[in-house]
Length: 589
Image (tube, rainbow, N blue to C red; front, side, top):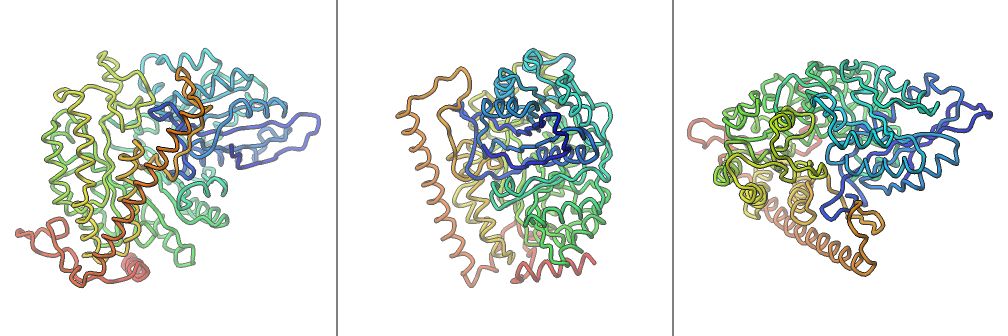
């Protein structure tokens, strides 16, 4: 268990200290063990935000008469011992546990932890998208929320800025937390809001030491599978350039310069230009920020947007492609995606040294096994996508799709642990369950075939990109997380951790020999398979980038569409990352 921040506020010796534990739960794997890694990939922005919000509240004098200590734990890479935490709170004389940013697939684990905390006499509050989504969209509380409330667990729905956490802290200190703190009806402003900031020790447990921040919340679109519009609202709200600079400098003071910008669609931030200008100025000052960002398929139509993103340090781009079938996009109300512009959009990004990942959903009503495989082949041949993040169409609680299925009484898998986008949890209108699952498996296998991965590396070399190591590492991670670990890349990490004594209630504890034999065999298989794949990809990459004719390679995906498909996207571009970014900054200026 890694408690990674201690904050002491107030010195009144007449009252015992008050301990706040902020815990980001993980989910269970298919064998019932908490999904954990020696090093994880995605930092929890919810955990970063709430840590900053509570520290701001304490600095403003909330609980000024108490000594307050905050402990921050992300279970994706750290052990959470509920009994030990409960004992520490009782010894301290008071406190509470906040289960932070709990998604639907993490709710079963969160509820089990809450049950253990409550049996130890500890106050517990749960927040995050599952609680907020259910309370915002459903007419009645679902059974798992009723069960939590029967245990005496409190809920926090909505966002906690603008002092909304103060009431929770005061009530917890008085031992009288309310059943529900519901702020869904009013979204807070973000200008000058407390900074999201994880402790350095927490960041160090993420691969490549990525931190995170958000610059905007809310989305104007109305995709039926999305939960954001029903939790964070349709009205967009933004942080300021001064806020952004403060976030970067606070992280730089900890030696952190790599970030996931968690905005669902940064291109829709109407303040994108002054925000990027501030980052460019910080780059020129020597704060070498690197970012992974999410944008929509229309970002290339914003004049200067791509050049400035690259100049500001964005080198990994996530695009919600979702599908290439126009009928599917229309059915999901994702009307902003215009299939006829996809190629133009990718070519605009590929004029820079970036790695592009696309989200892609399988299981829209018009899909069939044959159509899915056809569409994947078209995508491979026509679009210069580096990695593909494949998901099942999933009715996440908080989405319009979920509410519609609840209202009609349609079957949905009752195990929330499977609502991770990588398990099938409903029936398809035309495909059988087996066909849908086979389409998912075969689409992944097809995109990450050796032939296509070689094509991706050839495109990278032909375009003069210097993202050789990054491209190889991303191909390895996206391919093998699914193939060897049975999880999506974004919830994977380095070296799987399993603890025999921590298993989902209702499943038997394995005997020592069976557990360690199975766990050891899995580690050998997963680590060995990954090393073999990495070695083969690395040799392939070295062969391609040392080929004197590498710049002559062309295919439809990296050729500008002039009618005959023969015009190259880019001529001989052998620039280094430094010179390309310098050129991008000059263009942006």
